[in-house]
Length: 109
Length: 120
Image (cartoon, rainbow over all chains, first blue to last red; front, side, top):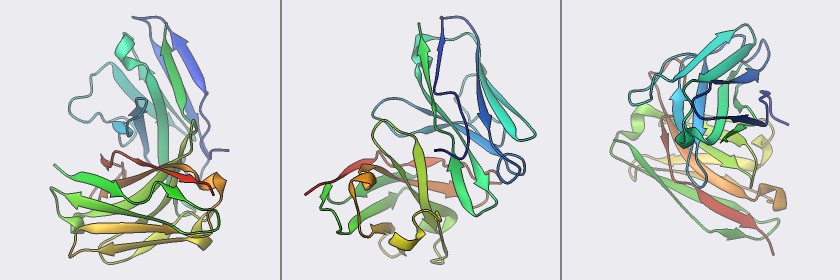
């Protein structure tokens, strides 16, 4: 059972927009920045969003994220087949541990 | 560009100790927090713990009693030991780095991961 709660899966058609939610508590999302990772099968996760809503260089602006209270969300617009991957939210928990969501498997139909 | 490479046995017997090493190249080992993160087959990510070059450590409370992370700055390596393993410890183990100066602590750098299977 992950500390942060994400939907296990999402399915969207190409060109559409999808939002992935991440729910936590006052000790983690409520008081710390949220980072998002993208992971393709058999590879290591990669930073997609850091500090709640910042994109590393090279990440398309189709990816955006926000945080409000104890929840965060990742939005992907103009979905492409190459966006099919697993997405994880993560943040520091004030109980002195890094925590992750359970991951959302995004399928592009 | 910082690169990480995990090494160690891919098979460990139950009740024994899992030992992995991560070699850091392309950057100063003194500028980052170094973590171990694992992913059980078909499951999500679990942070195990981190170490700083000063040998300061922090461990996931759920694993703290069985984990030791150490660092050898002269070799640009840090290591993981997980004692008394069971089948539940079977996972892909990643080493990862966070820039010390980052306010949001994102794991910028990852090794490619190494699968460790616990089985007799």
